Length: 464
Image (cartoon, rainbow, N blue to C red):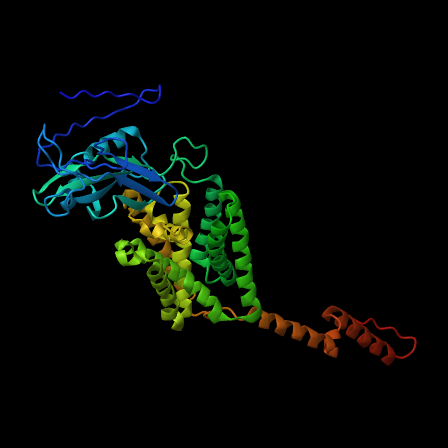
């Protein structure tokens, strides 16, 4: 007989679910070799999270044993007859996006309680041996429900047992601002809403309004690096960092526009444009399962590979700069809409760039698995992103057909106009009276000549 005692930590009514599991003497015992937590046998998965990563920890398991007998020793032996032969499969299960109800959580927790259900529904992330540390790091997905569980497997007897699942939303339900129901702060929503409006304009009209596009590119380039610098070096609050980032980004945009206006270095400006597109392409590359390869856990390997992909894009398109510029306008401008959507509701596509930002901000983020869910909402947003990008690129290519590839150097035009004005001022013909005054003067002279030609005393009216 087994008796359960349940107590709620709060006076309010709570919903509970209980799943009884039975095991034979051949099944491994989850948490049977606990040396870290409070219980003698602790099958629980312990979870902690912060903005960057979510950590799960669990106690090592022990071999199965019959009821009424002593359990096998945990630290004796290292061969196939000891608990060191056991393996641990870590599974990850995503709850439906933007659904934070308790009913949905309890329903899906039951799918992560028993071994067959866990294998059928969840994604196996990694397999650990008894020699590995029993803690795993994942990228935190703010506002997205995730359930984690561990299955211990005995390869000799081909038996397995499941730990107790743990879940998180990587956010607080009780926070006044930036809680789970509304993951984006007010400042974040304002910032990315204006950023998306400018991005939409660039997506459809960026190549025609060249200076506006340069401001947009300079804003992204300077704002990204400034945010990383100020976050790593100063402890100021997030809202202040965002305001300073907007100011620094604006200065970067103005500086790039001023550089083009004064020097007209098209190659330099297009290098910045190509690097921004290359950054997004490289981020998409590491957003795929390629980013979880063990070789890229090394920061040097990751950043060198990331930089090579980013630089490769402008090098490839160096012979067709107008195409590079229009592609950048369409793809980067439309992606700003995705970032704006993420400030109002969860979408996995924002983690294309957010994972790179996290890795630049946190030196320990390299150890985290960066898996994200891809559900119905993400497919819809991906389709919107693709349609907006294709529409913007197609419109700009058709409109710019037959036109000059890029506008002329502004400083040369200004200097030429200034020289023309100075030359006109020095030219005597520049001071010729207006046409109306010249016609009036000529008519007066003709009238005077007729009057002189007539004899004295005669007056003939002159009809003009």
